[in-house]
Image (cartoon, rainbow, N blue to C red; front, side, top):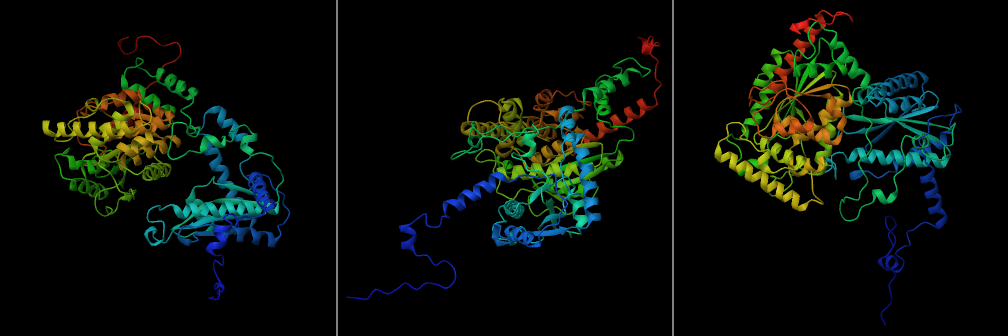
Length: 589
């Protein structure tokens, strides 16, 4: 009989055997009391705002940091960095920065939400004895870190896991943690000296809590409530039974500001409505606080589109790169018009074929793209990332007037498909000639758009207009996703957005479907010759300022309209006013 040899057991690594794992699949589980303790800690974690000034136990702080450092990270990259701040002067500067942002965010909300927000204590930066600025070191190229080539933001998610570990460990120690994100990231980076490529994720206040809330603070304050678990768990794929989108508290201009703008126009020494459709646009700008001089910036986003393989364009795709490169160099047609009306220009490479365009801001998709007819235009993760990138771009602008422009061979086909999906109309209702098109290209465009709509509608759950982010993924383009985010970000910052032609208006329609309050921030610069532009403007409730049958793109219609708006604002500022009793005989009335 052969002897039974003992299994060699390694001195490092996994010492379990396949037989042991098969015999007891749950053998890795912790005892019930440990599992219960973890569940209690998770359920008891709170975002603490009020702190005691008592000093912290250094050993507790080390255990909390060790727990954070034990977090999972993509590619074991460990991108987190923890800047510990105890100096009162630095904490005071951070608190002042947060207070400025608290007031700025409150100003963007509806009146009841604004008052509610101002009643809340949102941070304890001054009181907590220790602040930790969690930073993500993003200096390694995404392609060089295992797992980030496909999900470039996975390093940020890893740092979020570290924050959660820290938070739970602190709760177990009896310490309170408050995560404060009321900072412009560049200002917070400058406060702690973070170098280029290192991104702060906020300020963690840590200390002994001066409150012991039984429920999340914003829930107790009536700001929001925790969703039922069944509303956020889906099986196999997304369904119509998922929870509704998060509630937005973006505000339109307050009714008092709208009425005040109208009343101010009524005091001018001219008959009411003497400027026709221009009057309405001027009152919208006035309600938003746009005054003379009104600085303007053109955000021109460009991309190429795989749908061109279906013969929908009369120009080669190389033209997109030429236009964007010339825009970045300040010599394109659009850049020349911008210079003529003293508008700044931000050139965005949202997905031009080939390498990124030099001197253009690169906000490009990272996943494979489809041609609409046989596959989705964009990966959903790219849509989310590009929309958020557009938001961030707009948030960093200081111009009261944000103008939208675009360039991209094939993008009127993409816009026609997206508009038809959002409006739930046939391809023929939104598909036009495009630049230089003829009967043959029009037929090819209508065929491509109809096929794309049939594909998407066959796979859709239910009927009716498509959900905007899903529509952007299935039928959109990367520049449309970026411009959608720019509209959302500009509206959140209280800016006015001047649209150009069909493509930019479709991006605004996506933003409007995501956040209806953006409508009060939009001005239609022109009505283009594209067939789908009219129904899109109607859906937005906008009357265009110009109707010159432009086909140039590049934001030129928005630039011309902006010059008109500026001229009218300047004229209004110096026009005589009438008194409350001298109302008759104006303008031949």
